[in-house]
Structures are given as structure tokens and as C-alpha cells.
Image (tube, rainbow, N blue to C red; front, side, top):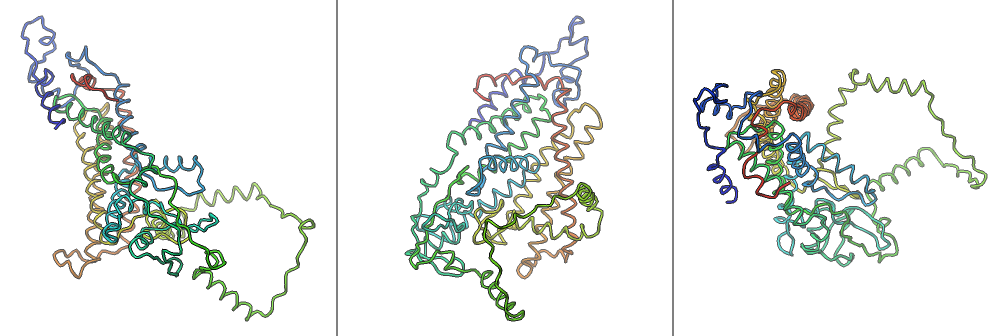
Length: 507
């Protein structure tokens, strides 16, 4: 409603009315050959960089005004709106800030990844509530379980590992859970399920922070719409920032029920009522396998002599041999020319799979103390839906950049780069959307007969994605760079302020 009122007021302002044509010979408008028709075309297209709208002489904005508005909005869309998972319990404050800086970098270069992350966690939190109905579990509980907010611990304070959503749900609904192939009942733990209010007490974000972020991005979008409605030029930097603001609105909606910047987990204490620590009583399959291998080696190799025990004060300290300068140079040269070898490219699929397992795992391994970056409690079918949604939002993000197709640029080469890169960042999500549809068809072919796409070799699709991702990053960097560089030469009406903007408090 507020947006409609502001746009209605802007529509009736003097900025939206045509200039009165002065045909007198002494008129500066006449001498410059400016008429109502040509001036209207100038305002719409923004082609001329030498002319200046005479109406904005007393109501101008500077480059610093544009930079401040855009940078503050970008900061709100990348740093302030992030909802990271819980850090490692032993992580320092510096490591926490460094992780957040990495996320901010990816939010600038590939904001679709943040959309994908938020969508996965939103679907996972809702799936958590559906799988474990009742017992006071909410979407906030699902988010907190996904971000590593519950920790299994011994009575002496030793951490055993994260308790994932499945453990929390089973403990709340059935009163027991499986851990290391052992059924643990609620009588063997000391744990009180926190309420939704108690979970939000651990969040560093509050209503005021959310209001400032949402208000700043909304205000920026309103200004861009008002400039377009009043036929004032929108700069390339403002267009890029508007694209961030649109995605930020979606991200904030998906993370609305997720606590922000929480750092401490809720403890689930295992009672040590059998005279042995929990980690000693609960042996993993890997431990048993190592014991069996050790016994087999003893049987095959015969008795092993007992090692000689040397007193500590007579022990010779180990000598650390530093590699020579020549060996270090050879090692660096080997790493430099490694991409030229066949073995390097043959190992790329394995490296990518390891990267995906690290950042996008669907399983929390027992004994880990923090979840992977893109972990979520979702199934395979939901994964296809989320990829489709993220691809569509990526297409919208690229389409906003394509809206600057006819913008005026300082040079024709810069205009060509903008058009090329905006096309790339729009076409790649379209390709990924098609890939998701084909994968869904292959996964669910027995029930989906309406689409017959044929079999596509997985290796071809894999390498296609590997090639497109660096291309996308390069295109994003070029667009961001050009958005700032183009400020050196602005069209005339790009310095005109909206006449009502100063009447509202804003950043």
C-alpha cells in the first residue's frame, strides 16, 4: 500500500510532466534545439551524456550519493542478511569473521548459491516439522537442528558430536534415538527441549536489524521504480544493486524463521551410568574393523616383540628436516604445470565430488562438530524442486541486468561487454534449469511419461557444468567492475534527484 501511495504521488509530480516548449529565439531550449518530443526521448533512453536536464540544477545528487546508496544496500544484501550455521565450538572470533567474509564474497559473485542454500534450509526445516509433528517442534527448531544447534556431550563436558535433525526429532517424538548403532533412550540423557523463544534468545539478530535490512532494500527498490516512472536515468550500479535487492527479499523470506549468528549449541548430556565413558562404550564400525585387521596381522606375521621403552629424559628429540630451496622450487614448478597433465584433469570429477560432499552433504557424520555449509534435511525429490527454483531466480537475476541492454556506456566496447556478460549470467541458469528437468525425468522416469528427453551421458553434462561455472564467475566480475567504472561518465538525468526523496528518512 505504501509503495502504491508513493508511486501515485510521484506520478503527479512536476518531474513526470513534459517540459513546456519555448519557441522564442532567445530561449536556451530553442537554441539547443530541444523540444518536448526530443526531451522526452532523451529522458527515456538516456543516450546523451553531454546534455543536462535543467530541472535538476538545484536538486542534484553526486557520485558519492550514488555510491553510498548502492554500497549500503549491497552491504545489507550480502553481510547483514547472511544467516550462517553455528561455527566450530573451538573456532576463534577471527575464523568466524573469515567464514562470513567468504560467504559475503560468494554472495557478491554468485548470489544464486546463497538462494540455493536458503531454499534448502527452508525446505528442510518445513520437512522436519512434517516428519515429527506435534510435541512443540516448530520451523525454528528445524532450522536450529540443521545449523548444528544441538551437541551430544558427556557429563564431564567432552563433546561427542552434533545431534542432527533426525536425532532431535526421534528424541522428541519417540523418546529414543540411534547413535553409533546403539539405541539411546531419553532416560540415558539429560536434555530439555528448548522452546522457540529460547532458541531465538540465542540469535544475535533482532527485529530492529531485520527492519533496517528489509527497509533499506525496499527503499532502494522504490527509488529505482520511481526513477524509471519519472523517466530519470538509472545507473548501471543501481541496476546491479537492484538485482541484489530482489534476491535479498527472497533470501530473507526463506530465512525468516532461522536464528542469525547463533554460536552456542544446546547440550544433550549422555549419562555415564555404566562406569565407562560413552565414547568407550559405543564403538564404531571403523574401530571394530581396525581391531580385526590388527588381530589378523598378528596371526599372519607371528608374535611381535615388545617395543623398548626409553625414559623421557634420555629420548632424542626428533629432527625436522627443512626441504632445500631447490626442492621447494621444484615442488612449486610441479604445482604450476600440474594443470597441463592428463592425471590432473582425470582427477577433476573426483575433486568435484569431494567438494560437493563437503559443502552439500545430506548426512551429518557422527563425531563431527559443525555441519557442512549447504547441509539441509531434505530428500532427493525436494532437491530437484530447489534446484529448479534457484535456477528460475537466477534467470530473474540475469534478466534484471539485461534490462540495461540499451543503457548508455562510456565506450561501445563497454556496452558490448555488458550485453555479453548479462546474456551469459542469464543463459547459464537456463541451461541448469534444463539439466534439473532432465535429471528429474531420469530419476523418476517410471512415473513421468509426459516428457521423453532421452538419455544424456552424465559425463557430458558434468563437464558442461564445469566449463560454465568459471565462465559465470568471470561474467559476474566483469559486470560488477563495469558498474563501478561507468560512474566516471554519467548521463545528464542520472544526477537528478527524485523530488520527494528528501522528505523521507533513509540511509
